[in-house]
Amino acid sequence: MTAVQESTPVALPARRGGPNARTLREDRWWLQPLVTISVLSAFVIYVTWAAFQNKNYYVGAFPYHRDLLSPLYSPCIAASCVAGASHHVQLSWWNFSPALLVLIIPGGFRLTCYYYRRSYYRAFWGSPSACAVQDSHPRYSGETRFPLLLQNSHRYFFYLALIVNVVLTYDAILAFDMPGIGIGVSVGTLVLVVNAVLLWLYSLSCHACRHLCGGHVRKFSEHPVRQRLWKLITPLNARHMQIAWVSLIFVALTDVYVRLVASGAITDYKLL
Ligand code: FES
Image (cartoon, rainbow, N blue to C red; front, side):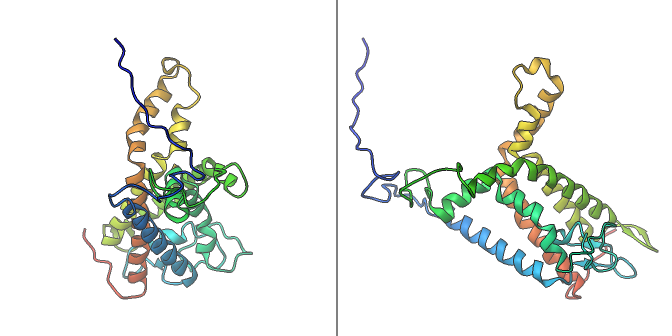
């Protein structure tokens, strides 16, 4: 005998989440959007300030320190780059802070990230703020129109971000070398290495990366290499949210560290 399930009739609301109450949830659903707003706002304010400083982003190697370059200014390809920080390519027409040029790629990559999109749509636009919470906007057109249509550029930012990762890895390798003294490790070396590793993890855990590895494949049995890559990427992809936050905060901390050493506020202690 089949059990008859009773259902409660529901009137469709004018806006998602219900017409009368903002939500019936009694838990602290507002905490996650609040943390997102706080951390992202603090990050954007700090990075904007640091990008306009146009100084204290590079610690010259000889004679005191290892070669340390802030990730906010790397690759340093503007004519205004300080001596030693430049990455051999120089755009002579750019005379403003190099960071304003550099940050287009990592900034675009983060801004269009599927995870961040979900977070900031919810936190800043209340669209909706959380599950079972009323949408702050009566209408929702998704990402079907300009300017949100541009979010589809994410996969291209992914390719460009890989190039930036290669450069930051190169910077981290350079931080092992000190002319006249040789190979060694300082706190700054470790900071640059950890930062590069986190950025690689962030890029490799990207949904576009997972799709690149295993997308559009009907039978994995016919594509063993792609299947292996997809299996490798999938556990990372499952942690994309955590990696996104940790790598974001560490980028800012790396700049803070290099800035403090470059300004003479602290010493980059030699470990090995
Ligand atoms: S989905 Fe987050 S970086 Fe691609």
